[in-house]
Amino acid sequence: MKVVYPGSFDPPTFGHLDVIKRGSELFSEVHVCILHNSSKKSSLFSVEERVNMLKEVAGNIPNVFVDFYDGLLIDYVKSRNLDAIIRGLREITDFGEELRMAQANRSFSGGIETLFLAADPTHSFISASMVREFASFGKTVEQFVPEPVLLKINEKLKG
Ligand code: PNS
Image (tube, rainbow, N blue to C red):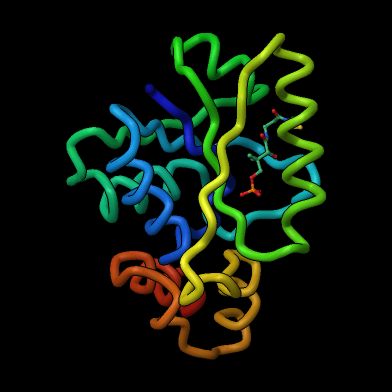
């Protein structure tokens, strides 16, 4: 199966990387795709910066491809001939929104399924928004993001 792992990835975290790696062991291809989340009004990194960071941290995995798409996730899945969507679930509060999204995507697409990977407990409280918030107040976030991402965060926030 060829799957898409969609998200905002602003910035990519160790939690995202864990889903990408585990997905790459389960599926023949994992297309990591940056899409727009309409509930997120501003972003720290441009789409191009996020593509570059994802390529740096996961581009060495042979069956992982990094992409972006300005449109609906289900249209991306169809246009690339992919089989399913994967998402990570960190904790129970993720579940309601993820379930709604999976059901809406399945209904509007006529059957595209979403498969969930349970987050590794070491990553279950990491979120990109938490990383952005702590970093913007000068806290070090090295335990939450891969080194190339940490460098980009420091560059961006210092200047
Ligand atoms: O990392 P995020 O912000 O939780 O990812 C959410 C994302 C980007 C996957 C979602 O907002 C999305 O699929 N956006 C693309 C537009 C779309 O298809 N919207 C319908 C979702 S029900």
